[in-house]
Amino acid sequence: MVQPFERNVIALIWDFDKTLIDGYMQQPIFAKYGVNGNAFWEEVNALAAAYRRKYPRMRVNRETIYLNHFLTCVQQGVFPGLNNDVLHELGAQLTFYPGLPEFFGELRRWIEEDKRYRKYKISVEHYIVSTGLAEMIRGSRIAPYVNGIWGCEFIEEPELSALCGANEAQRAAGPAAGQRQITQVGYTIDNTSKTRAIFEINKGSNVDEKIDVNASMSPHDRRVPFAHMIYIADGPSDVPAFSIVRQNGGRTFAVYKRGAVKEFQQADRLRKDNRIDMYGEADYTELTQTTMWLREQTRQIAEAIYQEKEQAIVRSVSEPPWHVNE
Image (tube, rainbow, N blue to C red):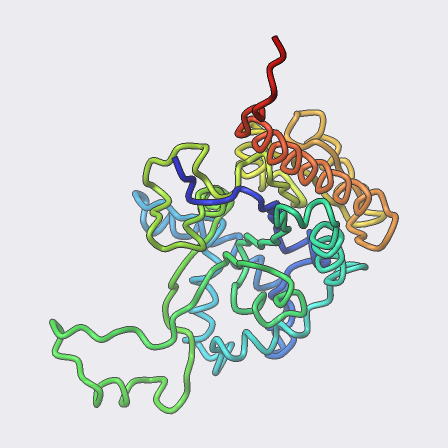
């Protein structure tokens, strides 16, 4: 039976904040509008309790409520004119940890230019799965090096409902007349739903829309087996993603900022709890423990794919005919 995919892809799946950059990506937004970032996050952290007091039966997602607070700040004029183009432009200001984004391209070339691995078109793909803002990641220097981005999305102009009798004149007369601004949340990623993105990569629904991520699919037909995945992130909030990859035969790695004792202790605790295989400093320059470990694991996966392909050929070929001497 013909398989839908060649299963020759190695996927490195990356968290973003505090994994690829030092801190949180929203900082350029605060700088542009002269807003104290710490004060913004303090307000966000207080929202769940405030809404619980106001609406006792309501549940609030602590991981994505910050998106609503951004919309509130836009409506109140704290972030006037904040739209997706602005987010894209601000993404260019993000500063990455040492060695990035070059390491992404170097790792890909290291595998794909190897003569043995090229025989079976073994390739490396990079994916970013973040609870941050997808449009900022798309505008950053790392975007050209990645094959797919999952993050939170904003809508600027909601589709009008005919049920309300709304029309273009009403849209033009709205409070944001003449100025594009974000108005609604279009897509969210939280630390649990990151696993959905991992399954999309696993099944191939991210490259073929005919494949529904919730549809039943044999493990042998999936585009990127879990054993061909490496998941890299910074902390305990990524435990669901660490678990789904590691329990299914993939590799997991945690990073911490150089000199950050608490982050180091956090990574070490993840290792002791068997959440990760290894950890290292968020330094992606040549010959650091982090780059050497990631290169070696990628090489091991590539070698396993190569050997599997070679053995498949041997199994498929019968012995040649030979002369019989009686």
